[in-house]
Every structure is written in C-alpha cells, then in structure tokens.
Length: 373
Image (cartoon, rainbow, N blue to C red; front, top):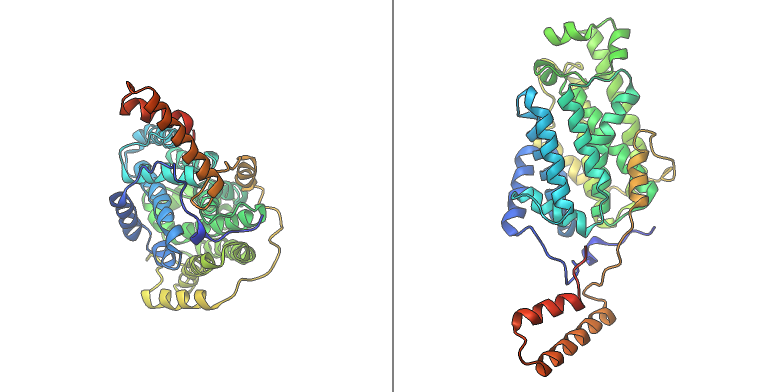
C-alpha cells in the first residue's frame, strides 16, 4: 500500500475531537519529562504526526506509571482500570484525563485496532505478575506487547498500513525494548524485577534469585548484557529497510529514534557492559549529532518484505484485519455538496413545519448526516 504524506491529512469535517489544546500541551509535557530520547527524535516529525505521537506516547507512559507506581498487591486492579479506560476511549467516552481524550481521537482518526493498545496493557499485566522470561523468544513476546505495539501504532499515525513496513516497525520496537532492558538491569534488580533471559543467566552460572538479592556487576553479567545488545543490533539493522516505506517527512525522526536508542548500547559497552553501577545515557551533544545525521541520511534498502518476527506477527495481522472507514474529507467536494443539499432539504422542511424548533432541526441534521460510530 502506498504511503501518503501526513501533511496532506485533515480531520473529517464531522469528527468530534475530545482533546483540546490544553490536553495536547499536557501530553507533550509528559513526554518531555518521561521519555527524553523519544522527545528529541520527535522534533523531526511533521506537526501533523508529532501531536498524535505525543498523545499516544503520553497514554503509554502514564499507563506504565499507573501500574509501576502502585504497591504490588494493587497492580492487578491497576491493569483492570487501564483496560476499562481503553474500552472507554474506543467507545468515544474517554476518562477525564488529557491522555485518554487524546487517545480517543487518535484511535478513531487513524483506525487503530484495539488489539494494539490492548497488547500494551497485556504486557503491563505481565509486569504486574512479576513474570520472568526463560528464553529470548519469551522476552521478545513481552517486548512485542510493550514496545512493538507502540511502533505499529506510530506507523498507522504516519498513514502507513503496509505489512512489510509494520513488521519492520515492530522490529525497531523490540530492539528498543532490548536496549532498555540492558540499560536498566541494575535499576530493575533493585526493584525486584528481572528481564534478562533466565537460560542465558544459568549458562553463565548466575542464579537469578541470588542476583536479585545482591545485584553486582561481573564479567558473567557483562556477557549476558552484551548478548542482549547484540540481539538488539540485529533488529536495528533489520528495521532500517522499513524507513523507506514511511512518508519522506517522517523518515528522519524514525532514523533518529533508532540511532539514539542503539547509541545507549554503545554507551553501555564503553562502560564495560556494567548496568549496575550507573545508568547509560546519551549526552545531549551526541544526540544532536545523531539528529543531524538522521536528517542527512537516505533510507536504507533491504528486505522490507521479510515476514515479521513470530512474536510480533499478531500485531501485523490485527492491522490487516481492521477495516479502514472511507471518510469524506475537506477536499471531497461531491460528498460535502451532498451534505449541503441534505441541509437545504431540512431547512425547507423546517419552513413547511414552522412549529419545529432549533432542537428539532439539530436532531434532523444528525439524522441526515450521522456521526461515525
């Protein structure tokens, strides 16, 4: 499917927006403080994509916080509340928060299947359960939910539904999550969480429970972290071919996001693959260099048609199964002309039946021109 330029997109004339300017500003502020790497890369997005991207990431970030920041015995209930909020957003009755109102607009405007944000919430439920992952494939299934789902939704916001491009976006999401896990080993361990594949730890002679009780750096741990970064690097390389399937105006931002996150891995390597003593960060000056390179580089070629990872295929399939409504837009002159004629007929009817008031006219207008469900 051919990508279209997001700058050309306008909301349907009949669309009812839930989020206002203050809500969009709140979402932007949430991302600026909660995800600095994404915020830096998002500066390269066109405005028509950047605003819904802030809304999407704000909902995802605040959802994570809603589960992570409650006591362990309250996390299952927090996940249930998130599921209810998601259902309300899809019903057009969002909860009274800026991020929920923004999400309600985003999923309607971009025909995002509920399975995608639903997958994110499922991943958060796994977190609430304290689930651990025996193999890289099991960890990939987790990353598919908490990160690849977001990559797929971002691709839809950019106006692209091509399965190959979606598959590469999911690759990028999984790669980023692997990088996050490698960077946060120490922080997670001190909070009682462990995401590194248990089989890899066992192969290096590391007992998972003993490590959580006393997280310390070691050559064995460094080898496990390095192995996870190598798996991420393979996916970063695989994801590059998907950039060419995006609108031209969106490509620099996605190149920048991948570059900045993969650079976290390089910082870890420079620190001796020790994620316990300190948390790897990409300096602001280095981010600036990577942003500049992203603006100058062209899209890479490669196997965009390669199938998705088995663990992310359900996300691509969900998009393929989602019908995309045909909506009259501002440039659709015949459709708008038809609506004008409908209104003229209603006005004539009102003149003929002078007893009808304005409320009846408004109701008749809705009947002739119903809002989308």
